[in-house]
Image (tube, rainbow, N blue to C red; front, side):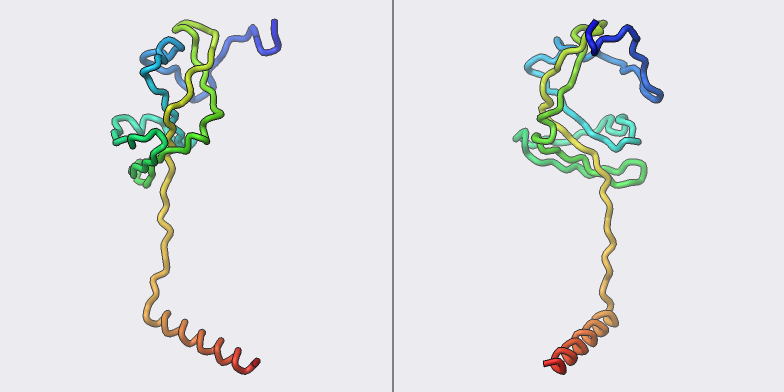
Length: 147
């Protein structure tokens, strides 16, 4: 038995569920299919993207930013630089019931869902502007005295 093999059976961690639907295997990743990577905030369920549609840029490396509102918070789905995911390797079962995993194909596109925050800016009132002018005048007087 090699160092990485074990007689223990894999058990799903708490909070994880077995995926339902068609199994992704090495054979299902044919040359005409693309594999996309989506990165979401750690406490967010991927189902929030269910039904989302957007237009992709023609260029695979083209940029995209789709504004979204999820649970009363603003987010943006952004394309990620392909250089950020070049080193990532996905493993897929060799067969539907297989326990042997093999490297899949590289990710064609990658996206990241990030929260967008609005940083409030101070609006200058007339009093603020006058106070700023006085401050500048005082600085100018001090610099004249020191010369």
